[in-house]
Image (cartoon, rainbow, N blue to C red; front, top):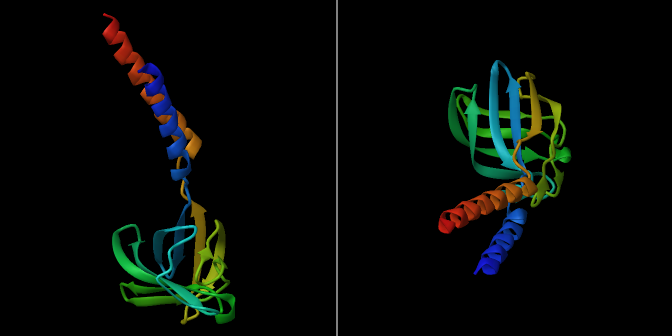
Length: 164
């Protein structure tokens, strides 16, 4: 029974390691006295795309000025369109900020990487700045080590109680 228990713990540790991949990025857009913060996967699921032009992500939670949240669609434009992004459903209408292309890959399969600050300009020529940064999360190896150690400690306590 003890060998079966140890084999199950090892199998569990090996299975969860690839599932715990950390790939979330924080986006911080600031300008005209406001900040807009949101999180996206480095390889987001695209809601719609116009090949050679742009792609759109739907229902992205955005925090405005660290005070309240809204849910918005976000469109990212490629370099041929002028780059940049549009926040579609925010208080006051929308922000359409142009600048460099913020993603690599195609419009149907984009990839984001940490970087910035990226200078952007809206339709009123107001300056914006976008910074993309990693969200600190535990690495898969750390999670596996923590889970294995916890299970081993519980097994040791259980075995010690059974010896009394």
